[in-house]
Length: 306
Image (cartoon, rainbow, N blue to C red; front, side, top):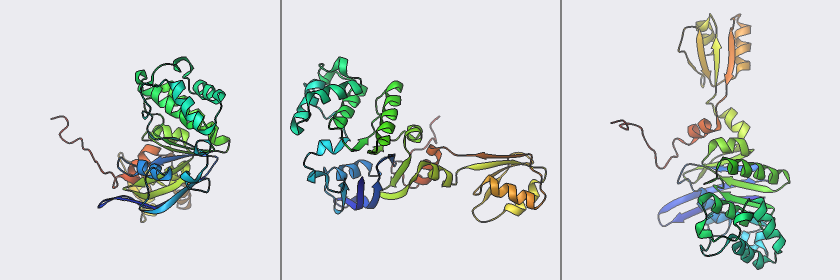
C-alpha cells in the first residue's frame, strides 16, 4: 500500500504539489492522472525518496522507501526508462541491479523473457528503440518480484502488441494482490486498465474514486429522450443542475439526471416516451471536464487553418 499524507513540494517561489493526500491500495490498478505540469512525476519522486517533500510524507508498505532494507524486493519503479548506461547490454544492466540485492540470475532470465527481451538481451542498450528501452525499464521494475509497482507512463513507445501486453500484465499483478500505481496520459488505455483513479491538477487532489463512479458522476453523460410532449417534460424536469437542450423538435438531450428519474417523471405526468437512451461519457471526456481549469499549457485551434 502507498500512502501520501499532506505532500507539499516547493521549488523556490513555485509550489508544484500542495497538501496532497491519498492512499493506493493493493488488489487494483490505480491510475494517476493529471494534465502536463500537474505534479505527477514530482509526487512519484517524493514517494520514492528522490525528492524531499517540503512538507508531509509518503510511505510504501508502511515505511519510507529509503527505510526498506531491500527496496527492489518491496517496490518496483519505472520513472525514466532511458536512465541506463548505453554501453551496457540489457542482461548486464539487470545482472548489476540483481547483484545489489542478492537476486539470483534465474530471475534476470525470467524478467527478460517476461518482457520479450530474451533475443536482444546481449545487445547494447544504446541501440534499443524507445519501446525496447521501455520494456527494459519494466523488466528492472519487476526484477525483485515486488509487492508494489510505481510506473510513470509505462506504455510510452510501445506498439499495439506491447500496449496489450502491459495492460494484461498490470491487471494480473493487481489480481495477485499487489499494489499497482500507474501514471498515463492515454485515457483510453486507463479506461481499460485501471479500476481506481487519483487525479490531480496544479498539484492538488481533484478526485480519488473508482473509474466507474468517476465517469458516472462526471455530469458529462446525457440521456436522449424522444417524446411528442417535449415542452411538458421540460417543464416537469426543470431544476437546478439539470441542463436540457434540443436539436430537433420532440428530441431532448438531458444532462444532470439519469434515465430512471426521467422515466418516472414522465410516467407520473402521463407523458409518453418513444425513446429513453442513456449516453454515458468516456473517461477522456470526464477527465477533460474535470481538469479544464487546471491545464497549465492550454492550446487553441483558433487560426490553425490560417
